[in-house]
Image (cartoon, rainbow, N blue to C red; front, side):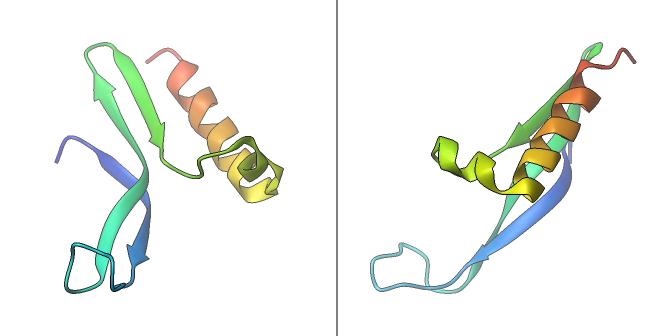
Length: 70
């Protein structure tokens, strides 16, 4: 409840997955932390993900939002 979820994804069941039904999880979210702001994004595990314009835009906007004074 402390986070504002911006993006989710749903993982399908796979033979090696510990879950028995599709699992929907947050991908990007924001929250307030004291007087500060937090933007979190779990997209990708490599620099190549930044070659996708939509991901670059989302991360850039999230960083700008987090850097703005309240």
